[in-house]
Image 1 (cartoon, rainbow, N blue to C red):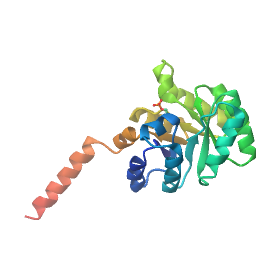
Image 2: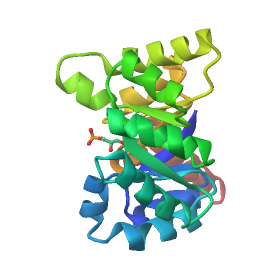
Image 3: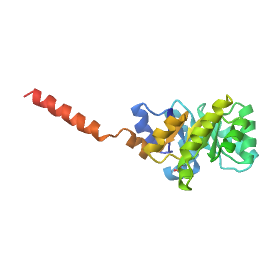
Image 4: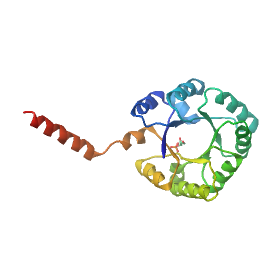
Length: 214
Ligand code: G3P
């Protein structure tokens, strides 16, 4: 499972790129707003920081507008992927963009039916939002598992990005569910490295080394 960062904050991305763990990045209008910068400023910077896909989301809700925005965004860099909402106009845009060789990430996916429609329209990626499903009492991880399995059943090559990840359990469960990618917020990525026994063990090693030098 590849790790993407779910943020538009370049300082945060730089920190984890240095760890060597970040393959791609996903953004959305909320994350761009949170960064305090514009999409036009931030996407080129992010696209230069990682080798893998960088999702930039359109804000139009009609097909023509989405396609126009997408063509501009796709020109920024070869690794820019266009994030399109899972609505009828979005599917129409995905079909057009896919025929032009522009990669898409269909976002706000909450059901297997939506995932199948997105894949059928030609989506490169689908993004089921697991945390938001958990919020309404459904099982987000199970949806990821189901989509992965269904795509396997039919040889569908659209990759599944587990999105709206809120905690370590989500990360570990979507690994088991077979997600191709998890897009992880900075706070959760920070937690992934931590374990009290690592800190305790290291302190002991250093203490034993120091004692052996006396
Ligand atoms: O990648 C989608 C993600 O940003 C949504 O996460 O936490 O706003 O549900 P959240």
